Image (cartoon, rainbow, N blue to C red):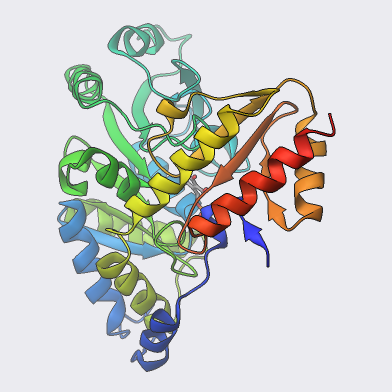
Length: 342
Ligand SMILES: Cc1ncc(COP(=O)(O)O)c(C=O)c1O
């Protein structure tokens, strides 16, 4: 039995989800004839507290459409260090929207008002105009970081005062909501647009959403088509996403408990650096000082435990609905034994 911890994108549809997909009515969504897509979009808009929403194939496309909506070519976008938009989207921001990203703040992916202020470009003709602040909550590369409420409010308020647009990369906003006890709507409130993924911890096979004002989402629909993301009989995918939205959010708390348990176990192993208290959601990033990350990944994989290397000395494990308590116990056993070989 494989214990898959490389990413929460590896989740597979549950039997119940497959059933609702099987039963879903479908139509051509480019012609606006799919009956489930608008139902999902309305429900997602409601959960995220925005006027409208658009189903898109991926979180990457949702983020890229947001850049197209907010920016013009040559603009600058401020992001947290290690932001997905900056480092994991194949350079799409520069290719499609024609923007450059400037990373600010610390390794956990958050930043404060001083960092924001320092990054805002001058109006001098030599500088790229700063147009947008994109915040990632939770922050993937930072280790599933949840933004502190006060910090989020201070940064978004200042960005507004400085006339900047705000986008929330909320691929795992559901996790942030469960971790903080604040609704997705409240967490997304300061932002013009928010992207969120159904295909990660929520367990849907495909799909993300971009939410915002009615006018922004009408424009986004056109950008989605331009990017090749106009889809046809997506009722089956939207039914899976709708099921995920209504049935899989509350259980994310289990993933957070599992991640903390994993972090606590890892912290006891020699040669591993991790502060379990910093693990508040479903992502665990541990530093290794006795064994290269690639070696630990290979040794664990040979025993059926899959984790990912994120740099030469760091490994990542992500919990999700296909990993239970027994899986975590097994992963810890395998990792402990692998590290003994160092
Ligand atoms: C924070 C964040 N944003 C965006 C994405 C992109 O999602 P997708 O893989 O669906 O393009 C991911 C994927 O892991 C992510 O972690």
